[in-house]
Length: 438
Image (cartoon, rainbow, N blue to C red; front, side, top):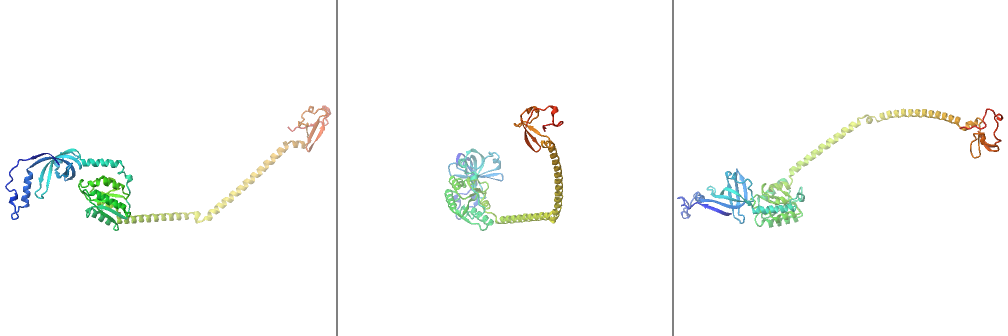
């Protein structure tokens, strides 16, 4: 922390019962309470100091805040507490990663021997360098599509082997193994231990990831770590590790910290689990649940099949109860009588229409015969026409010596005109020499 001001009370003589090194020896040791009282009295003489740092932990319990401040440019760190009365006077948006200045005063707890600082005021000085770098990295990876849900690989239903990357003999490893085996007793793990914080965290995790990704039997990889403050989880927001996870061909599950912890690995991984225990539940199916599901599906299938068969039997019984199936010949007999009746009626109608048509035809034939030229010729009339085919209608048309063709009822003969006869010279008074049917 960078100290901007430091207030101390003028030095005063220690109280009469204060512990001094010369007052204690192996034979005459002082008590723990007396030593703690001396330290408390000494610390209480310190004044308040304004410090600048970055919030790395911010835990709200019972209305009070317990957290940590870290040097923006160094490794120094201190723990602090902020009572609820002070919290009400501070900005509402203070959170992990914020750079702040705080007025702190040292406190020493006699009963536990714990040393901490009480915050009496705190305000922003800007976004912490660490958080700023993470936000820039988050924006870069999002722009490259590493957070895109479409690129995330599905988790297999029942993996043949699960790759696990976690700390050696860690609670996270025990939680994953225990909960996975409770859900599916025959589950297989290939565990590689790696540092989960510090400088070794990123390279060892990447090496373990590549080893498990190259194993054809490993169907899914879990990267697990227990809880911790954001400072200890920084390795899981390292760009090298994030790009290695994105490039892996095996699905990767992130199970870092607790529900509130959110390193960038959660966004890049194919599946985020809130805790290592949750990772085991998300990756391994529960055998009892699957058995219950199978029983449920079998029961539903049996019920549906029984209902379908019963429905079909009822339909078949209904069809068989119909008259046409109960006595098929009865329907044929009735239809045969209708066919015979219709056929008889049809024959009668055809016969009547035939007779009527025959009578009509005879009448038309008689009318045609009576009106035809042949009938006229049969009565003794004849038709005279000139050689060109012109019918003689006027005696003047056939002058003396004109050749005339005369047609009678049976054949034609040639004649020669002697000229027009006088009316008195008509050889057949009362008859026409030439009859024109028109």
